[in-house]
Amino acid sequence: MNNKIVLITGATSGIGKSAAMELAKMGATVIVHGRNKAKADAVKQEIMKACNHDRIDVLLGDMSSQNEVQAMAQEFKNKYERLDVLVNNAGGVMAGQRQVTVDGLERTFAVNVVSLFLLTSLLFEHLAKSDDARIINVSSLAHKFGKLQLDDLQSEKNYSSSLAYGNAKLQVIAVTEELDKRLKKAGISNVTVNALHPGVVATNFAMNSTGSRFQFLFKTFKFLFISPEKGARTTVFLASSDKVKGISGLYFARRRPAKVKRTHLSNDIDLRVLWEHLEKNSKTEFHI
Image (tube, rainbow, N blue to C red; front, side, top):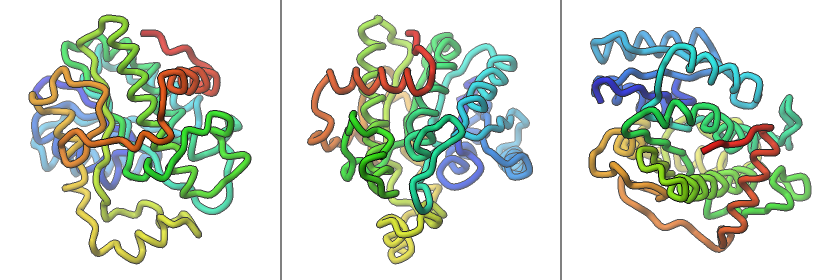
């Protein structure tokens, strides 16, 4: 990973932090994204100490705000000429009742899907400058509980925190597949995109999602879950391994291609319609 530039969103704790640590140890320049400056700076210092180089940077921004995502992307582009690996790791289950962001979007949809789409779009030109650019979208086994509800993407008709999360993680896989189709149609072979399930990881994920099925499961069975270090293995594998060079459009678990539950992810038309919704909701056109 020497001379590789890696940006990881949601990298101040859990899987994101562990992936940042491992890729930095491999020699990569790693940009740690977070919302809290003190926390991000502390993680930066921790990684630099562990990896014995100082090519660790911090990028701050709230993924629920499109203005902040745009500012993050611009700051990155002002500092770096290209991007080799983009890990869209930020996300989560939202606590309590349905919440709306400053942009008027349901928060689960905004943080897990719209911000991923927007940031990838804004940084795509920099990714295209890499000889081997890899976009890695962190999804979840929870996609099996989701539905691609194109008439209710923001859960206005039927909301629960766990259902919204499952829907969002299915949408992440749908975006991954549609982006792969568009890359191939455009004849772009130096940029790949894959999604992954990291495993059921013992982090603080879902601890604040009051009343959700995920909070109950994570509180009750957390002792059975894997460590963040193990949870980051598939992310690190997709970011660094020659075994997946040129591989695109797949969903991975345990560093292997895995099956997606396709009951509610059925056809190319639905994928294109979701893409159009995301362009509208993010107020951007994704140029490839």
